[in-house]
Image (cartoon, rainbow, N blue to C red; front, side):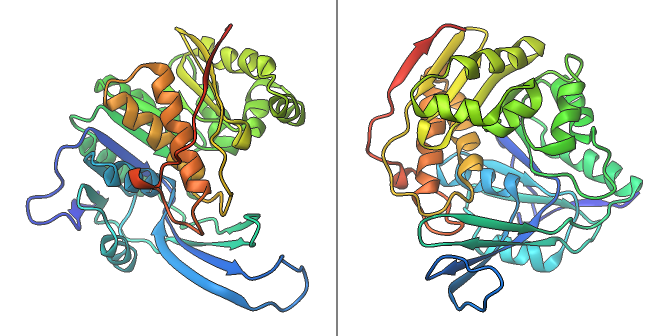
Length: 339
């Protein structure tokens, strides 16, 4: 088994932090900003290009740390160039932890049009061996010691079993921390299939993912939400709550978000913003919810925080992630619903 070490955190290693994130499939994110609409099959000039070391868990960690809360960002493998780029813009309250195992991360390309429409081209990532997975799991568990929250974020790399997150949830919950899972496709199905044995504390589906998990109609969810009717969304989210997920946070873009838990259900309106890029909006919503919970806020305040951070991310260009100074000034109206 490979030896594991913290990277980019100084000789004393990573500090104990209330929030830990795990990016199972980290990436170099290259964002191309266009001056006009994307024209398929044509040659176009790029107005600007941004390259960042990223991944959904890294994004969550950045937002958490920029908001003044210590956060450990755990990676499943090490890459000197990736970590160097990541550390060059790492907030002081964010530590980066990775095994000594080395792989080259994938490159994800995002094409952003002037009106905020975003096209993403995501590579699969390196294939991890069984030993790689064992080392990464052990590094996450040790890096999460003493944490209040652990966020498992993003797609799984090739070589990882579909139920890797479900396996990690069981181990992490046994240590006493709360766990958020934000993934998609087969990994998301496997997490839900693992309930109630792998019960966890926060899931953040959008309308498509909610439909995938509950057999609902995503288009119907969105159309009704645009009219202010979220009853069907609450009913679907309650199915996930009843299967063992403590907080089901359904993000609805400009229609706000819905939160369902054991105490009830709430809808939050979204503040009016000019959408510039949706990259990182979901990750920022997760961070906003966790930040409020760590601060001891009530469920409806956690929902409002999630909406504010998600909206702030959508109002910023490219892959820019929000800080507290970027939060929109508009009202977030919380409405209590029947669940």
